[in-house]
Image (cartoon, rainbow, N blue to C red):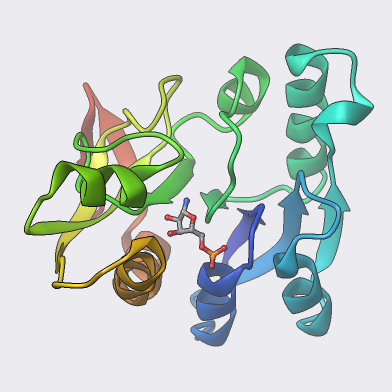
Length: 198
Ligand code: GRF
């Protein structure tokens, strides 16, 4: 039985596109859910025949109502795993309660270094010689959940945010596929913040 995924994305969707290209029967993607009505990810999802749901923050009175609506939109597809691939909002209590230890996120830095929405810019500003990317289980914090896999990525002379981020994304696309395939094959458990895929 293929692992059933729902993807959350707010941006161009290149990581989701890599997941879609890597479908090998061990997992499938049921839907894209986004908070951005004109996200580039929508066209990729539609071209791939995925269901798409837009859950705009401004359509709700407050964050709690938005989070509850997001939980409902995800739940409509009964996912085994929720993959946040460039979703630029913090998931709230309703989503976390509905999918405990079944939400993973990919972040363009070596967590715990450079959490938050500007990880690539922050790494450049810090002048580090290398950064990287992290796939982790999502918890209630901002990029604080237990790490599943990380990989280092060098910063090169002359890098700007775009060139460094693209180099990181090229690693993220491979890392995310590897992690999803491993979870599809072996399952994912988290105990006392320790991740086991086996
Ligand atoms: C990725 O680097 C992800 O880690 C970050 O946003 C980027 C999404 O890229 N949160 P894309 O929209 O999939 O191209």
